[in-house]
Image (tube, rainbow, N blue to C red; front, side, top):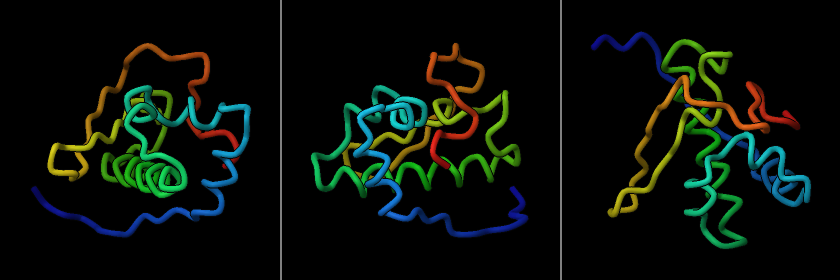
Amino acid sequence: MKIVGHGVDVQDIRRVEKRLADPNRDWLDGTFTEAEQAGADPHPNSVNYYAGRYAAKEAVAKALGTGFTDEVCWLDVEVRRKPTGAPEVHCQAGRPRSPNHSVLPRGS
């Protein structure tokens, strides 16, 4: 495999905290799978949990060279936690879309 570039993806914790405080849940449900939400750390650590997964999803989309498009959405990229605690990425492009599906998460 040839590496053609590299970078660092970061997320502003305050933006994530604000989105999580919104009772609407559109951003949460449109960006994170049910499994990711079920595995979230309890508050206040949930902010760091979601910020890290959000940044990881952005990095995956960049690495695929597609970004988030009609073919690849936020829910297609799932960041799971291995028993060791290390993150593990699973991609499922093309799966059925939920009503909250969005190419760009609401509030971006």
